Length: 515
Image 1 (tube, rainbow, N blue to C red):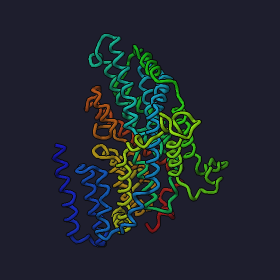
Image 2: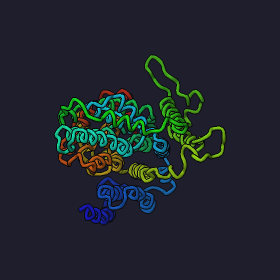
Image 3: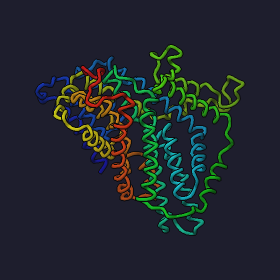
């Protein structure tokens, strides 16, 4: 079935483009804008059906836009080398260094041991550890780290009780809640930082691309929005899973504490390379947070970039690149020699080249598409179609937007969905006189809230493969969490996004005029 859909999509995408290109453009739309719409439809079909790898689809603007006279080739190049792309690349490489020296596993086990290993506390500890790790490394890697720990605890408890997990209703409920908790926490945790998951960077980069004069979305600015949501969403998800969806009545979990202790014992003492990676990681996080001035109301904490007099020259990507260079330079062995030791450096190219380069190309394709949509006049034309929404209540618009994004990302790549929607939402906001951030940012967050299906996100697929979760269970629990997510993100827009970005509802900011 999947192969058939891909086969149809392979031909449907270019066929629809040709039909649109040959047909006369709608009234008020120029040929360049109409051709851009055709390319966008082609990309959308290939992204949704995955007729070719989604990263390959992202290269389409490089070929199509110059040939169609939409954007000059030299003007497209910067889209694939945007600073946000290097920020994400730096985040990927920092994550690889953390994984290489097992720092992430030590952090995870320490958090789980601290929270406790009674059944409900175990689920909470696993979720908190997963969410924290997912702030900094991919949600897929975070899930792969935590899943074996959870499965080992449940299996050990069943062996001690002399039964099988599936034969004991309470152990089965615990296993399901644990598996889903890890998957959901991985997705939610990625929302907390700018480098946590791809849609975050899609929003920040496309906002800068479409509105060059918009206030920059710094690492700290994103954390002001994303971290509160993570702090609220993870406990709510835990409560729902352990008390409503899969009630756990076990008082004790035989063998749980022993499994955690054994896992910690297997880890070697924290060695030099692990400490150095931890130091680089800490310095990088602090560098991101304190790069720009922090307004605390009564006073402002000056950023280190302003103290150095280079604030206008720097980007969060600069901090990421300094961290990457440090990882490639600092020895993993004896610090007394500049020569590589038998352990080499904290990060080597063999490890670094395993990062998902395709995601970086996908970002570039999204920025190139946004460039074409804006330069061709298609964005203005699309925005004109949304003027009928000018009188609609903001609350209704946000709820509908969050619902559409949340459920659409269940069936296709969250990065692709965010990439396609950002230019459209920007145009819609301008046409109805609202701040574009008010629509683009909630949409980007909702793109990470796919909880219903195994195909929705890699963490869902990974825990489904554990054998402890059935599709009906995931769909039922995920549907409720999707709705909870919509409510939380809508509330976030009013309570956090509006004050954090200084947004006045119903007022189009000056930086968005003329776009």
